[in-house]
Length: 274
Image (cartoon, rainbow, N blue to C red; front, side):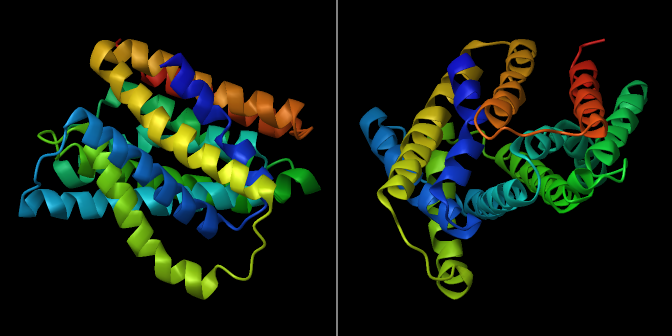
């Protein structure tokens, strides 16, 4: 789980270093990651034929997942990787609200104040202090929030697929992503130049940060209690913040620092059992 979350924290580095539009990055990530996952599913004999209902949920989850990636990767172009990644981690609160609206699950009212604190963090991260650096970040913050919402939709859809192996679910979602994004890439992807640097970043992103990372995460999910998974997941935004500061020399404003601290603190408090 530690290795999987550390890999997650370096996704933004590969996306930016590829120098390619988000559509191309996501499409090729789906292609390379899907091939890697297909090899793993074949090697471990995990394939089961989905039912018609399961195909429907696979479609919903797959489209939401790949659109989530497009939103998050686009957010890196507008705000810093650190701000976009931390804002993206309001996912648990978005999932809480969607589950209440669409699945009738009761809202844990004692935890709702943490939702308010996280939303205050989002506001601070998106330019409340009025400086140019902070104002310029708000489109990235909006995209990260949209990506978090789409990821929550993908999570709800995937929860309906308990009979299928996680690696098979991810493989089919990657395959769907290749099909769904082929048209948009051809129409809006634009003319791009694939340098050796770009190919290297895309191969690592597809094979290491998709196929291998998913395998590591699923293995961890099967062996660790939920509290341990929730706690270790904070490695992701911490590593992303370190990459942004050390590699790209990002300089968040004071308001953005405060906003990111509020978001991470609120999510940590929300995930506690009590």
